[in-house]
Length: 222
Length: 109
Image (cartoon, rainbow over all chains, first blue to last red; front, side, top):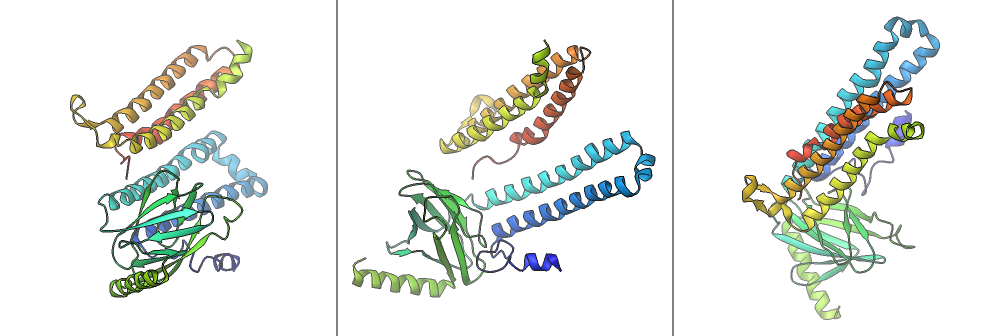
């Protein structure tokens, strides 16, 4: 019941527990592995602690040296080795997936306290990122002032936007939808509300939107 | 020797921490300078990036082994020395466990 109440907060446009891409799914898998293992370790430790109070004779029967050897060395080692192996494997998969440059590159420029996205063709949107579904997109990240960090929890991990340097983040949204993005590096008084929307469209709709944005930009003299 | 024995308790994990910081920093520096794309003929086609990370790892491993060997000789001196010895062994094992992956994991995206 308590778990349901706590987890009910874990949904919505910024939820890491509702991944919409392969790399975000990797992170979510790792999160669940860590959460289950952490819960298991906590329960096991707490049980031994409770036993020590209510049934100390059981622990005594098990033997001090054996308790330290198993509880302090063997079990933690097996668990940690498993978690490290999981993290290594998922990390490798993430790096391998981003090795070839993507066909579509969108430049993201952060500054206090907005995000600007520049698409091929030169048009720009502010605090709104349009993406096509089902294909790789490289977000070319940089900053005009201080260090910011780009994070769309449901699509990928976070990556810093650093002045004078470009970082590339691979995104691949599985399907159309509306997601949220945030700045995750404290960047001044306007950091907390420095959010942006992510709209993932089907390929055709994506092209149409970019064309109309370009037309509007031409008229408005953006 | 008394005051030094307390410091020796943390010596093993200080070497571990130094390896951690050095590997973390040089990994990023190497990726920034594209060292993972520099193949070294003399080292069997190993990348410069891999070579420098492995070198950092081995230097710290050697320091860890030397510390264990030293403390092994001193471990009968009193209460803190055997503890420092065991801590150094734990740190050495932790180094192999945490950093051994420099031999095979991808270094740069």
